Length: 130
Length: 36
Image (tube, rainbow over all chains, first blue to last red; front, side, top):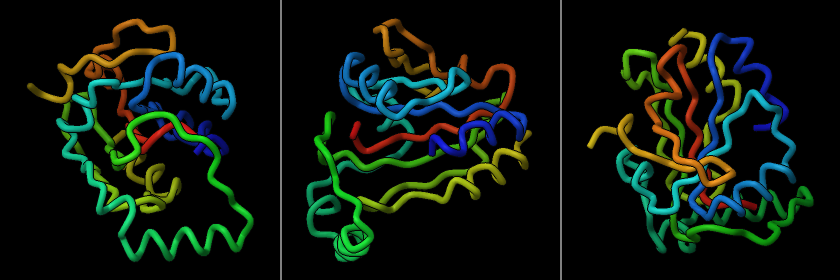
């Protein structure tokens, strides 16, 4: 997502990235990734926002999802290696686009590791909301 | 509770009301599974 960070600002909006560990974990990760100042890096240790956003938390989706296993194999073949992680291992992710009036105009709910929208799809959704 | 009323934390541990993020312009909220 970081290589596309400026595209969100250029599309008339803002990118915010939310994780679920402690603030120190978020800070360390944000410094490692190198997000520009325009990106808000936040954390939700209680996962309240995850729940309100309708995202899923599941051991089964994390470990035994056939599509995620296939994505893991493909990523491994390409040389990607998962490093150490911090946060809730069973929590799934997702993405929303929200207009200033509070209306959610785009929602993606992850069904397992590697299941996330393409950055270009998010930029397009943001342009439509702007 | 609405999503916009939820409080999260910034990297310094300060409270951030989510609704403030989209008060002036649309926002893409990306929820990551975990850090790393």
